[in-house]
Amino acid sequence: MVNIFTLLKRLFRGRKNLKLGLYGPPNGGKTTLANKICVDWIGEEMGATSNIAHETREVQMKESVIIKSKGKELVFNLVDTPGIATKIDYEDFIKLGMKEKEAKTRAKEATKGVIDAIKWLDDMDAVVIVLDATKDPYSQVNITIIGNLEARKIPVLIVGNKIDLKKADLKKVQAAFPQYKVIGISAKMGKNMEDFYEALFEVTDK
Image 1 (cartoon, one colour):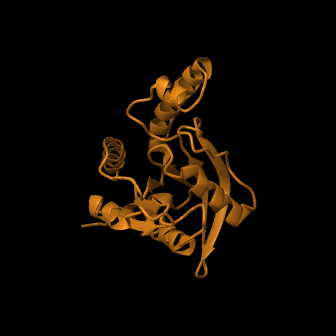
Image 2 (tube, one colour):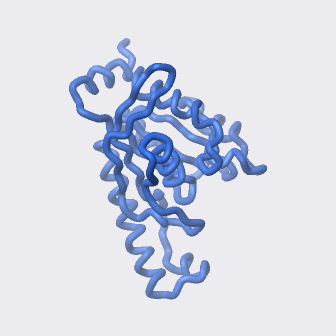
């Protein structure tokens, strides 16, 4: 039986850059991780972050990001996607202090962002799923994302983010998705980033 990663590696040959997508639920830390990767390797951030969900409402991409680890080099286009949610209610934004007009606009933009993020899946060569390690990984959103990736046979790396927080439980994330490699990091604090970069080589080069 031929390993799916071997097949993908063959397909990757001849392509200019891989597309590496960051996916996950809102406020998992996707854009924080995207910013950390970009600062580490190209010296500039990718996008704005916020404690309010759906700060990222459009797909963002940085081209030709080059990372290096243990003498190896990986070139890819980094794609940061809006948080995937099964329901987006403008009233939730009002509860966080937004005015009704602003809340409705944000909800509309966030809904479009989710649709666009799902559409972009077909263009991804590999995906990093960014989860908040302080939250229950067994959610409808996470299962939906995983199911879509499995159906498309896209290589996956799961990141349990925010391990600097006391409530973080990486073992829960690992137990929820035993079929995938899970790396614990703190994108905000820069913790375990070298392990993360090494794992990127594994998921794109097997």
